[in-house]
Length: 60
Image 1 (cartoon, one colour):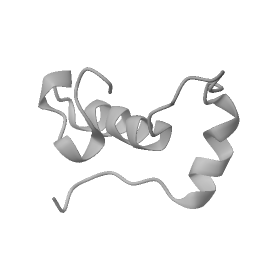
Image 2 (cartoon, helix red, strand yellow):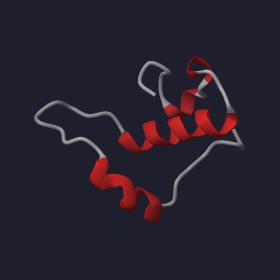
Image 3 (cartoon, helix red, strand yellow):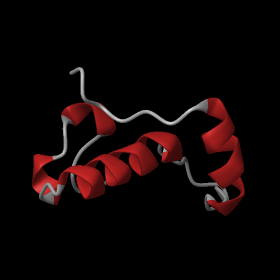
């Protein structure tokens, strides 16, 4: 998909201190989830309409 939203490495580094810590539980890709949230908010989509590249809608 050409209109997917991807953050730059500098943007990810800037927000990464706010990602939750693992505490022994395997974490999902926080960067992909944040990108999916931004994509939904920018385009006014419903959560269930998030593109599969960002992960399942229940995770995003």
